[in-house]
Image (tube, rainbow, N blue to C red):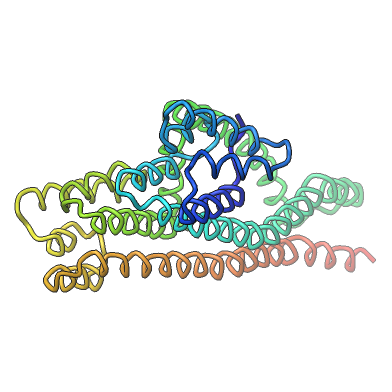
Length: 344
């Protein structure tokens, strides 16, 4: 079954949260939502979920069997069912998917203009290198004049670029095949690991993973789960490799008797200010409330990281493309104009 979009997941979670908090069962809520849906992938998924719940499956199990929802949603719903906070988890998931959809749209809008500009410049550069310059070269040779050294170097560079592009295409295909193989084995983890290694969005991926971890930890602690057990549950939810490793280290330190705030500081998982906030909350007997506040702070940090990325990438692309255009004008067009003037 086709994967359900983020907007549809947000709406489903919001509707289910409202119905469950109103006293309806999951089965009744799914039936009501399915009746309001047109004949789409979501409608089919809801009917399948309803049938599974009628057979005694949990909501999380029914979500998993549709194969239309991501692992984070399934795991968080499972936590909500286990802790008795299903309606609150669903409401939080609705906000999460709305935020993710907003981030996706912002990234798409921010990258569209620079990408179009890059493609246009590459086309212009290609036409100059492979169509215009060879014509000028032939005409000038007939007149007994050679192209400027800079123009000749650009033509040679163009040939080298073709070979380099072919090599890059082969490497890209091999890389895509490897990523595809990893994706089949573990779809979410392979994609998360890939994005976590991209320099420009590495910080965004980390902030997002930390927001997920803090939110899950707040749910566990609010439900009375022991800290060490809660950390193990959080570890199973997080796919970001570096964050997952830090959570493992933190779990080991807490299991060895270290306080949570000290373990968070030693592992470098949370920011120092946030770790100390949690420590103060734990000593005051309000650890769950403070962890929830930290989760909210990380949500805000994620939005800030995304905005910083967007504010950086667009001017960077424009400056890069301006340099390329300027280099072409200085290296090719001006020398050619001088030659044509001297011939005239």
